[in-house]
Amino acid sequence: MLDSLRGAQQLPHAAQQTLLVLTTMSFLVKQQRGEWAIKDGQIRAYQPELLALRTQFVGVAFAYAETDVVL
Image (cartoon, rainbow, N blue to C red; front, side, top):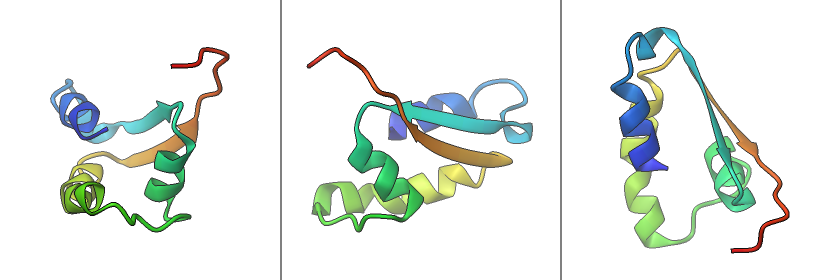
């Protein structure tokens, strides 16, 4: 997710856009919406940078993308 936000930030006019982040991992959606505490220390270490990147857009929304594909 961090790399995706970094990449999106580099797009033209990114600061004027609302970013929709779709993921097949529901726990990531819940963590970024503040619905679920981040217990994993490695993930929690990235949270300050994620929050800073999120301020670079008008808005950021997180949504769960259902899939029938099992990875």
